[in-house]
Length: 190
Image (tube, rainbow, N blue to C red; front, side, top):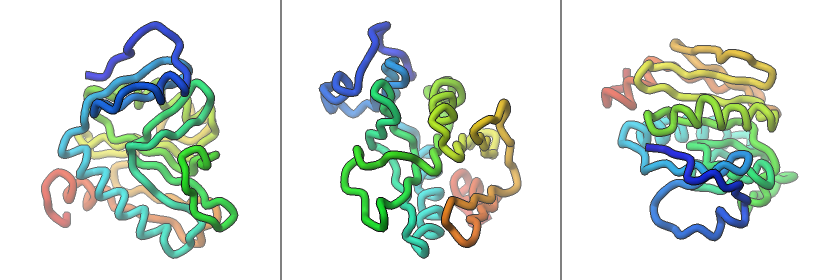
């Protein structure tokens, strides 16, 4: 179960000093978030989505998609590990260190019971404060994507398809959600 570890205000330096014990540690506005290892369904969703986004972005080379573990420092008191994240290239150069990622184009969290509060409330607020153009919450149980954009008071609930056009790309990525969830949950092409 995910939990806030203490009432102490955490910093990036304190987080980096923690041992590598297999848990996922993040901080948002000084609050330490600790979550367990993800489920198989969670990891299958990450794999499927990573493949779709990566294939779409490879043609343009203006952005890259990766999955966590990663240390994405959005503020001095906020280091997160989005399940998937897209970031722009640095003037045509490949990013080499987490600290070089100055902005995200997309952050994605795959919902699980242990992370639902963090993903829907704590991290969502941070991602919207940081003006990340899109934040997706993938709910495998409900077979939907919740799409958040800066200024949104409610998510857009997507059950048929997701269309995403990152800055600088010529054509949108279109994901058929029925097929996506069939591959993740049922093991079929849908």
